Length: 76
Image (cartoon, rainbow, N blue to C red; front, side):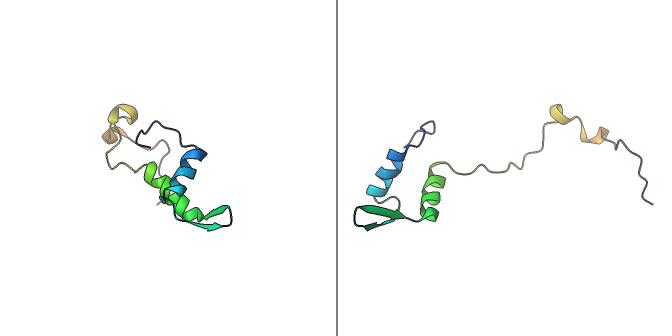
């Protein structure tokens, strides 16, 4: 699972359980996994996007110094 373009399949999850990458308990012929552990495994493969601290490009929104409200200020 090293390629970021790979679509995760049920087989990949089963392999991760069998290899011990996702903690599980075995009851008879059934594997039981914790949803939190599954989420942790999935997040490790594809981390959530982060919020950028970079300012918005002025080309998209215009110069911040030229911005003015469209309605007059009525609060005094």
